[in-house]
Image 1 (cartoon, rainbow, N blue to C red):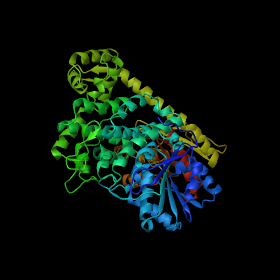
Image 2 (image 1 turned 180 degrees about the vertical axis):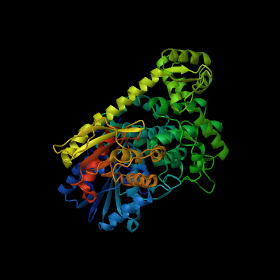
Image 3 (image 1 turned 135 degrees about the vertical axis):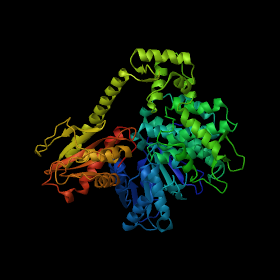
Image 4 (image 1 turned 45 degrees about the vertical axis):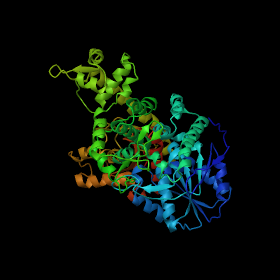
Length: 640
């Protein structure tokens, strides 16, 4: 593997058309200004998100200042749900309002969602402003930046509206990968494994060894070397087809199914993980059509499931009909209908019509999808494990119940885990004896037992403690910045609790202590959590009898629904004397590694000092930055 010393920049061709030079290395930011100054420009517009601006903006903009690069920084939202026309319009209008000209350069600094939005805006404003792409995620630096495609999502699917627009160069500094979550890193590596499956099967031996490492704690140099290895595997494909319209279509392996799941999850399933699921489905489809062997299909489950540790199931909330309807609106649909990239064998794609795609009868696709979703856990995930190892096999049994089935019989469990009844019987007897499962005397089916319930409670308490432990330092820091009292609120079951207070010397008359319940319709933190939760959580609270604490408390369900929708749009919840008239608060949600809202951080002040109009932009920005920083520490990829 190529070795990279810090501050040593290399460059190479991407083989795209046009071909932007790729400047790559570890801690090479000091080179950026000189590269920009090889072009004549009036101003550089540096576009990123608030969190990245807080983490890295000062260093980058200081380099610009020191090297005479006239610049201006601005931020946008950049989650998968923000890849919209409205966000694109906001950026375009903001850039024009700030005086961008044909002589300007736009720099997009962020992950794939951000660079897609910024790249598309650059291509559209005045029919094209020069653009520089600076990826900050492993996926961005190794995959999405190696394409001139820029797009936003539509109401029917991903990347439905866009253009091909090339940056003038790509600047990949791997020092910015250090704050990415493990989920994001694994998501990108899945795309690297894809390159091996479609074109370079011998690379699977590399991943066999590579994936034995602690991927979360790779040092910067090793991470740089791994990124370069993945980049080179994609460049071999682009060299053969720079347009990505011939053999380059092979890079879309797994994307048709993956995009559908990513779209219906509203971005909660990261791109690479959705594509990994999609590749497994495509492999099953190839097997159904008589191409891939069962052993070759199982290799997909082995590398993505066992080695990389990804969940390869289709979530319960995504139906086969959901996937089929989105496929019909796929952005690769042609006059011949929807076609799929499929393997003839590992390392070689099918190419019956010269476009490296295969037309498949929709009913066959539906049949494969239905079987895949029903099976939940493919045989390959258990075949390679020793069924005599009680711990490993018990874990697989627990995962079957975790799919949503509260009660399962021994026969059904044996079928799902592709094992015999005798082995399953021994496992179930042991788990039943120790209280982890219990058997219904009438139906003979099994369900979670008291020992498992107690374990779940302990884990739940531990997770609550972890959120508070991680967030408390950030709460203290926020209090010191804004000079006001800061609270943390957490969700536990159907209730919300105050879990931490970073107090100030000045009392505010709020008679609430750590451990007390807070009201879901009258406290800013609880409202922020509900607003970003699944729809059924919001519907649950809207269906409750809501107590009016003050004249400001919102109790009408439809009015409260609009409040929650406004919070979701703006990222901030307000409490203007809704629980106590003399206390105001603003809150922002905190997300966990599953991108679920699990807590909120609040600034709490006396109402006489901070009326609605008094919340400064700086105060709101500080709150959002604190919430995002905590979410990042909890390995979330979801930001506000």
